[in-house]
Length: 234
Image (cartoon, rainbow, N blue to C red; front, top):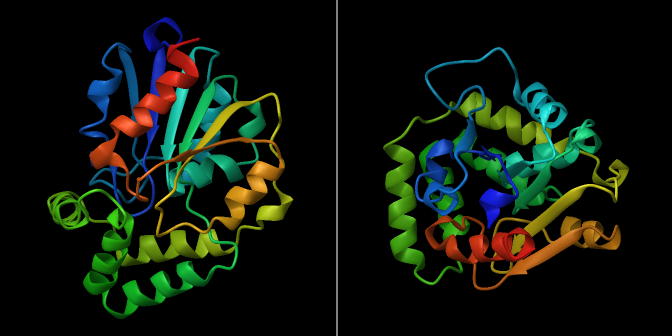
């Protein structure tokens, strides 16, 4: 069981959606008593002293062997691109890291939220759940979640998209000794698969998740089954 392997699990949210994405997920990890939910600056009423990059650095440098990090979307990308990644002593699960080598989708998203924020966000949210078993229902639920929780500013979201567009993916090398696994939804309508192919060529563990969209938390059992197969049955 996971509790026999891990003492602590750290959850890291992505772009746009805050820590509420884990609300229906934490029950899957109820056997692990020590849970840490990372909230980045701009995603709650309270600010903290670390920006995203520094906070990820702190997490990576402070992990122990019995720690598990689960990061989603831009949170997963922030782990992959942090220069302290190879210092991590724990295990890492990255769900649908948000990249686009051609940068077209990020540019379009950047333009849309600055032109008409709510319409741009609606389109992005729909793409996040497109390809799920019940797209319309999941879109409605995600829409409610977003507007019932803290909404990041347009300036913050734009700056994070700017940061993504500056990443040079080919320069990143991942230590093969790291216990790191990429879980990539097959029905992802947000991510570019080019970077996933780049990771696979580096012999990084990439597991494709069947019939799952970019936002997988309405059917997290598929993700959990993979995590449990990786660790729980060992």
